[in-house]
Image 1 (cartoon, rainbow, N blue to C red):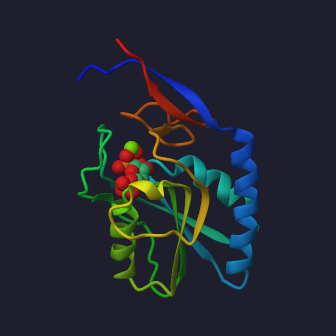
Image 2: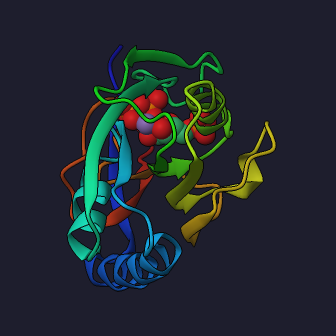
Image 3: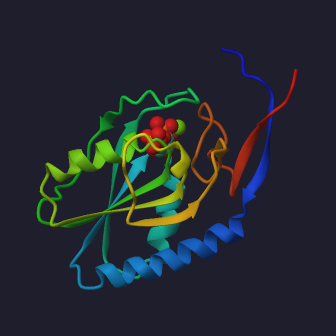
Length: 180
Ligand code: PRP
Ligand code: MN
Ligand code: MG
């Protein structure tokens, strides 16, 4: 499908993101200070940049694992059918787990993934999302930590794609379609 031309306007600078990630890491540190080895689970693919920055700000013993879930594919609309393409490598039974996500939109992805992870009987399961778009919510879900609440704009960058592009932008930008 040919794509309508668009430009990306900066919404959250790389500097603001870094400052927020540092503050979030402090809160997470306080929460898991007594945990023996926290399992930090990134949801592929969107969270790969956020988890990389977050764990490097976290002065705690951590294990890093990944789970791949996807509902959007290349589309702009959620399919509402979340599929798990790749499961965790390690066991989380009886462990403290922090799920790291780039963005909560309809809420389907994190709600499905947390329901699934709970079946593995972790001791504690907490969630963090860099971005939250509460206006778009279809299932009730609130992360334990949120970086920024944003309005209903189509965003890209810092791991987030539009049709598998723009994940490598260092900031968060919003997509603005150009009239043809
Ligand atoms: C995006 C994003 C979140 C999810 C949020 O993932 O990274 O995981 O959608 O949307 P929701 O709250 O409406 O479920 P996507 O399915 O595009 O996969 P990706 O991470 O590989 O880009
Ligand atoms: Mn995702
Ligand atoms: Mg995507």
